[in-house]
Image 1 (cartoon, helix red, strand yellow):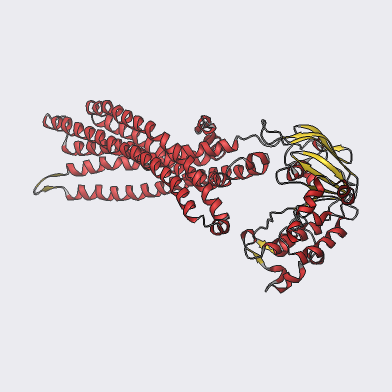
Image 2: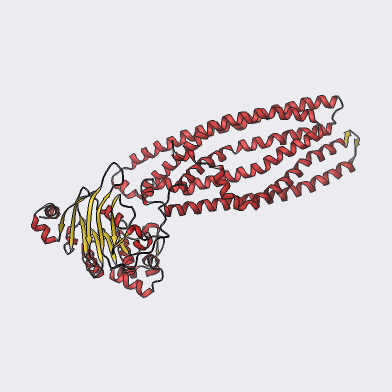
Length: 582
């Protein structure tokens, strides 16, 4: 059973709406007034009808008086209906605003493991589509709740004031309408729930395809991608059609029952008129009330699709909100300015409990040392970076910085001591200046330019039409991969952290620029502890210590000359990169 199935919806929605209870109260007051006035209309119409006895027997002054009263009534009713809509809009959109805010905050507090283990498109679908569907369903549901409850109670009161026996007939037939709607609602809800899940799958697939369209095109995978999309789309179509089919049965079914109510009122009312128990005008009023009494049931079933979709979406959103956040470290002290001594002792780690990745890892880095991590793909190099930054916590063992166990200090203070440049670049929509200053928003223009110059980015930036004020598109799509990498390097140059992590930081830069960047890195790494992950082993020959990894273990360690002299695994790796050039 999916976790979303167990999430309570109504209490959670009420908890978000409760702070805005004043709007709920005012909306209910406006609903009561507007419904009361609208229910008074059949009385006015009925009394007006009684002034029309027959041809030549019409009291025009009496009819006109009720026409004027009816016009004023309608105008006041419209005003209060408008005020009711304002109140329901306020409570709905303020509630949704808070749900969306909490959902975004949750993204920033859940462990990275949760983000990595879920489709990003599905998470985005929960944040955007599902919350919007909650908004639509909540708005519809609140409006129908306000008007429906008051209308039902009001019409019952007015009908009782006219004729009790006919009112009893109406009330006795009503449960049949509710029973029919309840059966169909249970059938359709499971399909709406399935529809929300499949919609998330579809969003995830589309996000993958759009984000990697160049790869899809390069491998001529368009047809297979279309087939995969069509398979998911067909699933969404099937469950959507079934959901709509079941829900669409509700309205005509309840209308059929309501028509029976109307017919019963007409027959019993006509008999009563013949017997002198009712006037024609009173029967006219009663028929209007019978129609208004059944109308809320039709309206609620008419928006049943939106309401059920909102409930299914709410379960998915609340399941996200109920995810356990990273344990709070607010009570822990901040890591003091680091000198850069890093000690990794007897560390075990795995992403999946049944698959051990890192085994008894031991690393000692003195302040200012350059530690290179090399090895075949999947050996655990990037995982070590994740552990150093506490993106993940170790299963066993410990990691310490300057003698402070990383679990004894705040994560933000630890991560603030590292400057990190990754293989995958990330730039946000903003100016080049803002992107470089991401880690130091208070940096001066001179410092930003100096950092760009050291990263060899200044020259290409100045060639752009607006220079440092050039607007970067989402993801940096208006820049080349190499230019994006240079900006990420400049971002770290600006922060001047005591420790560095370079994960394939020059992988997207041409060889000539790489030499210049390497010189800049050498200057930047002086006096700073540096962890360098590299596949091009020629770039880490000057490292103080090279850790050779395979299958989650360090199998060799030493500098370049020492490892080459051993003629072991590192030597084979190093030589294999030049065999193709001989």
